Amino acid sequence: MIKTESAGGVVKNKEGKILVVSQRGTSWSLPKGHIEPGENAREASKREIEEESGLTNITFIKELGTYSRFKIAKDGGEDTSEKKTLHIFLYETDQDKLKPIDPDNPEARWVEPNKVADLLTHPKDKEFFIKILPTI
Image 1 (cartoon, helix red, strand yellow):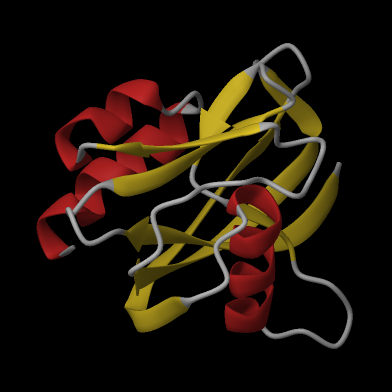
Image 2: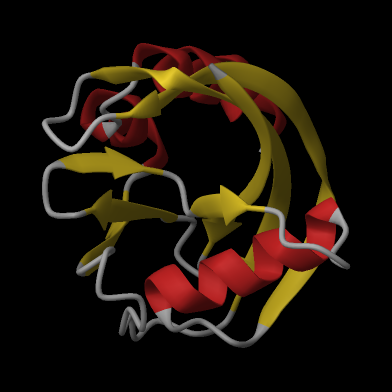
């Protein structure tokens, strides 16, 4: 099993809705991805948000925390070959139009905060989001 570091974000729009993205059309998560060489976690989170949603104008609010989980497999289950440590940040945006750039993440949508956990595929993503929801 390899261990990797990823970063991503909870992005709120003007209506208070949260950005959720689809991986390969088989699972849903908050936008996030691997931290590349030379990047810090916050830089990686902004890059991943842009790639997975097309949002370029996001404002950092605060750190939301870190948690670990296995990678989501192509079938939506767990891929135990990779254990990810995820660093999550809170952002706001005045942009509404979503246009993913990354072909592996073909869809992005704005979701009411109280419906986000139901849409997230990975149980650890759901657990983390429910924990931080009162703070966002």
